[in-house]
Image (cartoon, rainbow, N blue to C red; front, side, top):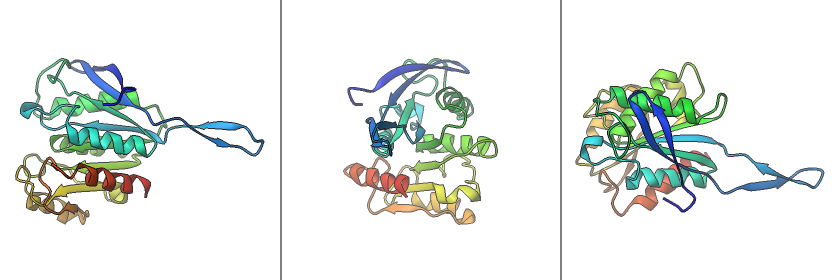
Amino acid sequence: MNPSTERFEVAGPAGTLQALRDRPAPTSVASVDGTDHAVPPRGVAVICHPHPLFGGSMDNKVVQTMARAFVQCGWVAVRFNFRGVGASQGAWDEGRGEAADLHAVVQQCVGEGEPLALAGFSFGSYVTSLEVAAIAAQRAIEKIVLVGTAAGNFAVPAVPAELHERCLVLHGEADDTVPLAAVMDWARPQSLPVTVVPGGGHFFHGQLPLLKSLVVRHLMA
């Protein structure tokens, strides 16, 4: 978390949710009349954390790394604690309630017509995929980032074919929490590409700079 990180709360379906918001540094461009005009952020990215029952929270290092990547690329990055994590109210709900939490955050933190990106790590990728499936027909999703997708542990929905070019699926070759084979079995029927980090484990220890650079490359494409 950087010194300018904003702490705030969101009204979730099971009570108040803790959240953090990071904004990109203000930038400006000169117009034809010679005056400078502020460049607005590219949009809002909402990022989901790993499994609440195994220590997952919005302060997870992979989640923080993804937030930094989004901010570097001009996005406002929003992270939040699912119900029952930290000071967020409510209790673990096996993914159903957590998906409702994410939907509430999107509804309250992303304006109508404002560009939206969705991202998640591990269990958070599963929840992110549920939100993608739920809203893709109603609103545009500019970017999707799924890291360590928990395909072997949960019934992760397929990514809509029209969003494949906007979706980055990242997985560690040596992930012993979610085996790469499980993610390939999920991706294969969709013909959805998977970017594999050689030697990477589930938490990408020692490889977070690489993870960040891969996310930045995707966001800038």
